[in-house]
Image 1 (cartoon, rainbow, N blue to C red):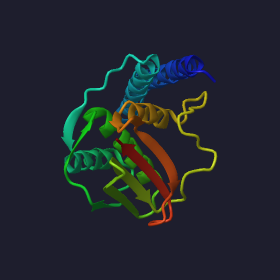
Image 2 (cartoon, rainbow, N blue to C red):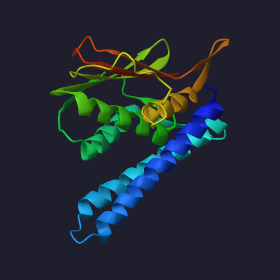
Image 3 (cartoon, helix red, strand yellow):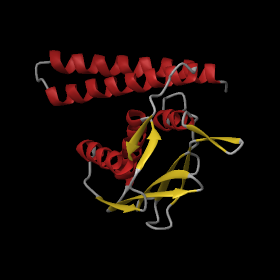
Image 4 (cartoon, rainbow, N blue to C red):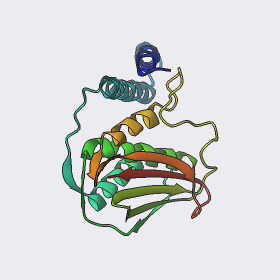
Length: 211
């Protein structure tokens, strides 16, 4: 499937979902027994979906220029943890195994969104524990998110959302990460995302590498 078809599918499915969410929210607010909390959840869901659709649109059109700055990595991780906890359904234990505590050149807001999305996913499936690893490997910054849940499904494909928008967050995260590039010698290296099994906790392992 070409990127143009992927983009068309994302926009079509996203508009449909947003329309349904807003229609449901309107129905809740206009009904005799108003459930404002449910309506707010639907509106927030629509807003998040619209934001992801806009990001996907710009990424696939290749007209999104990410603002790169030297960012303190521990501060970035702490902010992502705080945001993930604020929206997490469970409050599992989150430990940090930090072997790198300096600055790195990256797009702060976009990488923060990637980490928050990964932490929310780990929180959704973890039983009791999440562990974040921060270290350098082969001149790359490596950020790992381990959990003790069931692990990633075998049929989950990076960068290929289905027609219902499943995997859209991972799709956007992959493209954001690939926008991080640095020349190592004669080779241009791109950022990458990998999904695997955590040997530390037995569940899923989300690995983000930034050159």
